[in-house]
Length: 129
Image (cartoon, rainbow, N blue to C red; front, side, top):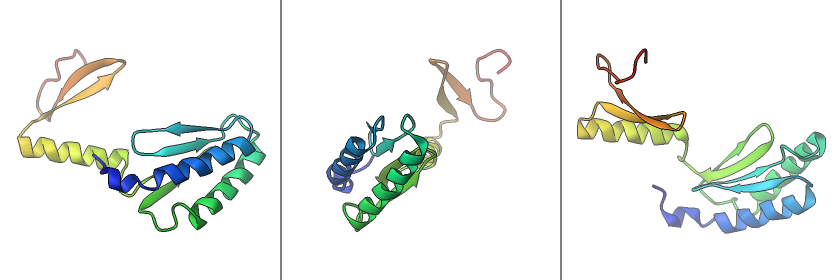
């Protein structure tokens, strides 16, 4: 869980992303639980790359210059999220919580169904799985 005080940068980054959406046809902003993503996967590839460079420059000199955030440049996107927030960090927290509670099973979503995965030597309740 991320504290709201760590998300002070969110509104100003949203404004920059919205500005670049106006400048870049077929780009869009995706709002996630703890991050914002500007994507240009449907935009002209060359123009999108140039806009991404400009967007990064705007971010670094403005809204995130002193913020505790990570900027992840994807193949056709730019994501801004709080430092330490990632899928890997979430998995580490889950595994740590499982260890503290003495649990050896983990619920995993597969194809829309939740299945219990039991630790080494156990049976996961699924044939061939």
